[in-house]
Length: 60
Image (cartoon, rainbow, N blue to C red; front, side, top):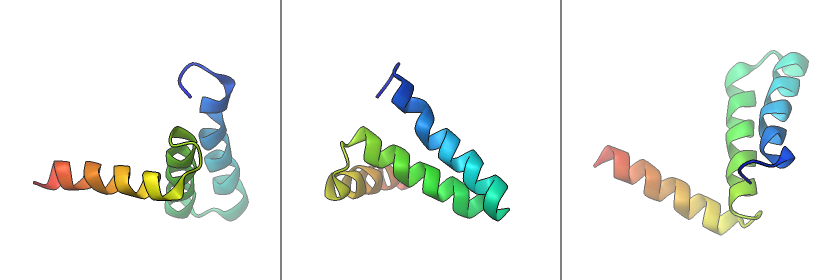
């Protein structure tokens, strides 16, 4: 996803949601989830596993 036009889609969706809903945290969370799905080719299980591994790495 790096270096392509698709890498800007999560940011645009986040900005659009902020403007429409005025809920920044919800919009940021949505952008993060969409970005994670893009990175893992829309495989939900792989996205969750990678995110949990990253969180556990930084906590421990």
